[in-house]
Image (cartoon, rainbow, N blue to C red; front, side, top):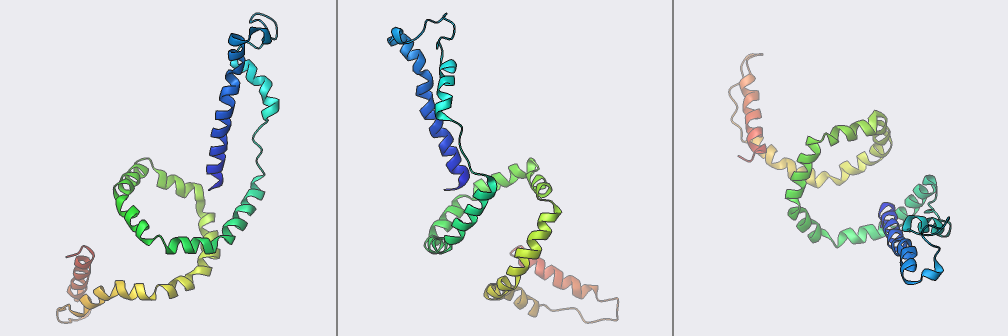
Length: 198
């Protein structure tokens, strides 16, 4: 469970706990008048907000550690869970595919909504150029070679249809330099047909 989710659950639980306590002074005033000062008496506990003030010292504020400590804890705990992550992913391929297929309409609507509200541009502006450079020169440079090696099979699978199509193109005869645009056009047209599935 993420830290944000835990914080949300804690706030909701606190609200559910405080609700009945906040209403308690009113209930006591109705059922046990002897325990509560009269409404017009100075300093009387006559309504929920005033009664809640008496509870604040007992309840206290939500205590949260400093952000740096929480960030370090996140890295430690998440890093230690890499095996759990791998095991969980290994057993969830079918669920992922079914969920992804079922969420196609939601994805489309969300992308359109985000585009209409300019969220992409806002996200780019919030990240800034420095974050891009930092991530690309540290994490990106470390993972580049590994990613390329892991992609060998997928690259071959994805490229094979285009390479085969190029092999089958009948190009116009080669002409003097500067007069071969037709050859390039034939290649571009065939590749475009491949991309759009024709």
